[in-house]
Length: 447
Picture (cartoon, rainbow, N blue to C red):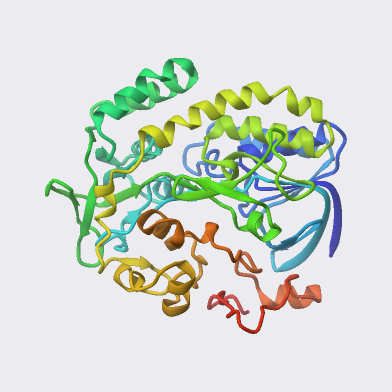
């Protein structure tokens, strides 16, 4: 099946929805693709147990009512090249050709390994929030939330709202840096009000700074969390997250130029959010972690520009600058203490898919060498979790996004039946004879 659109938007979070809305407002035919069944991304994920106003649903309904937008939910882009992408939806392969492409691919949570982090009952902070919103039972359970960044408060508030007993929140940043961060929020009163509302909702829940989890203990599931000062706390659920990492696989496959973003990378864009590849734009977290407000304004800018409405995009540049100024505060004030990284002991699993321990990685000079020797990053997640962790723990040489060799298709696991029905494998040149194939097909993807 082959379809054509004027503007293709990949990702239906705040940035993607704003981009689709902006492009459609100029009469463009828009295709909006997302892996989830419902629009909204992680920020506007629908809460299955506590219905509330749904900004994502409202935006999508308005878009679909205009008959200019083709919604492809529960679909994933498995291969991309300039001018077209290959999408799998419900076992069917769809080739989408486009005039312009907006990458609104969002971010994933940064998880750093520590002894016991693979025990049942241990998740990321954002992972806990997603599970709870999807209906996972949490009522009455003792939950400890730890790590770094504003997401900790949001995750704890969601768990509490669903009946959990949040025993404490532990932020690794010291109090002095958090106070400095709070003093600068007067420029963004909306952010200040949001933080104050979350903290008020969690009144009575201890919030400690300069503390982090160094180990999880239990037989069969987590029962205790051990902190850096030696304290042990009884828990039923442990949520530990250290911020977010941009999703760059599609940008890399298309050949978009990247730039350093802390220990990781993001897509390099110009003032109109154009990437280094003609007719390809990027918005939101792909351009660097910035949050919902930044995603909304950048999505609108990219959508306008992709539809040829350059002046409408330029008019939003002051709003973007203001949002990005706030985003710049986050790495400054929530940067990780080097001691946090020391919790990743040589015996800690770093690649859960392939059972590779951190000590095995240290025998190699870079990501590619470690991958070839240990299969680290060759499991179902294709290095999205371990690659981000190693970039943080061992530096740029171990960052997949900064590696010279970009990801080969398929970007995500795809059913061979879908490709067979389509009549072609994803477009990609064969590797040189001296270059090993470093991607594997995860087990269970062949029907």
